[in-house]
Length: 108
Image 1: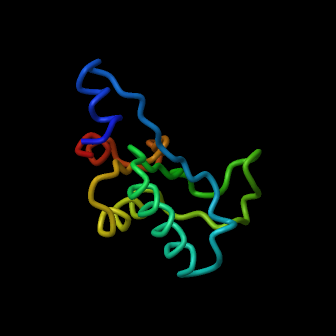
Image 2 (image 1 turned 135 degrees about the horizontal axis):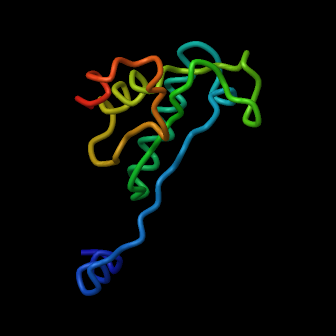
């Protein structure tokens, strides 16, 4: 067991760290975007990060980038990442509930 794991056992608490990936514009174009995300998520998992989260927007939000920048659909992205990771928690930072039926959001 690692020293961090031993400390967590003794104290009952452990600070966890996660990554949020807010922009896909530096990940390349086309299929390169997913390959880049796959590398980031699997590296985060190997390094012991607790979670990896992506945005769930139809287009990039102001302040992070321009609407023309690449944007992947959040739930599809984490579903694909689930196929290449095993322990890291995957999720969206927020979910766009105005364009998802409430019964679908509830099931997730």
